[in-house]
Length: 153
Image 1 (cartoon, rainbow, N blue to C red):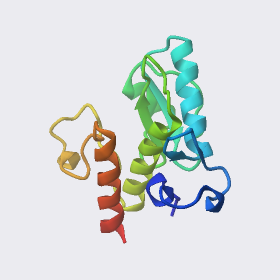
Image 2 (image 1 turned 120 degrees about the vertical axis):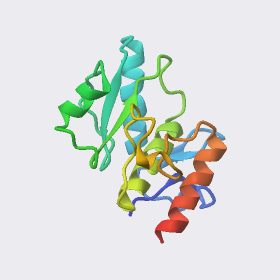
Image 3 (image 1 turned 135 degrees about the vertical axis):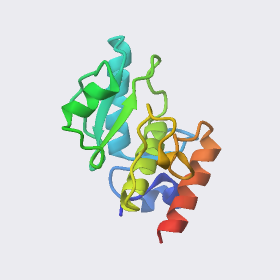
């Protein structure tokens, strides 16, 4: 099981696993999330639009912006179990902890035997909590991850 930002929030920073850090006053994030944020910022600087693909295992990307979600899926041979597909934000990612939230959410669902739903299918059976589109508010991310962790243990 992966360490999550929620688990490390109240742990002294000296006791964190290697590769974890935080911005001043921010939430903890891993090297994986920093790698994802760097990729998203690269796409933003290049004014790329579309989707980026990240490996759940380590946050690595092929650094290719895919025009459509289908193109992104095809690039990984439709493997929604080992990859995370995120829409590229126009302004980039200011805080890598946002990417950590996405990564924690997807990894928790994966550990429970589920996956993020297809964002194009609004009537999919997995749209109900906790398997719906990711929450919009930061407080909701934390609450949902804690609930998933509680259910998974």
